[in-house]
Length: 218
Image (cartoon, rainbow, N blue to C red; front, side, top):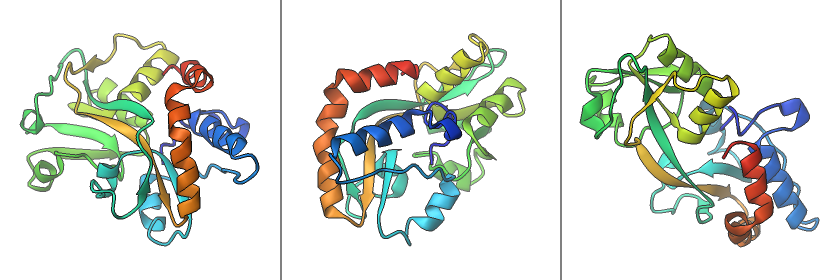
């Protein structure tokens, strides 16, 4: 469901980190598996996941699926360290120091995503959440100051700024909203799960994968 850049760049040309990851996992399975990319919004994924008999979801964290104990789904170890940033306009910069520092603000973020630690304040009205269709729309709303701040993955924000030559147009809070590892979620196939687990050390250590990540600004 990470359907923005750099994960999905040009679907028709199969450009993007998710396509690269799928091709790599297919290649090293030596014919056992062929991984196909199906882009979905998070809301579509939320609806389909309970019904799916076999699925792999990349770039995710157990906390986002209410599975911190890793008992609902099958998880690999983390293969990518990441963070979520609070971004704002340099004209009205916001420094995040915890959930309470966002009280009274309008915060934009991708529809359907889970904001760990902020949900209670959204539910009681202390924070107004504004849902967007994608990461770029989140950033655009911050640019034009329709919201006070946005919440999105740090590498994606920096990728979009570099691509559109907008460096300096966004303020990043010195403290991110969260730091986390990205994992692979699997459902419905223990043999597939075992194969994916066996590839994590390669993704963490391989020069080939690091080179691919560098090409996408990571």
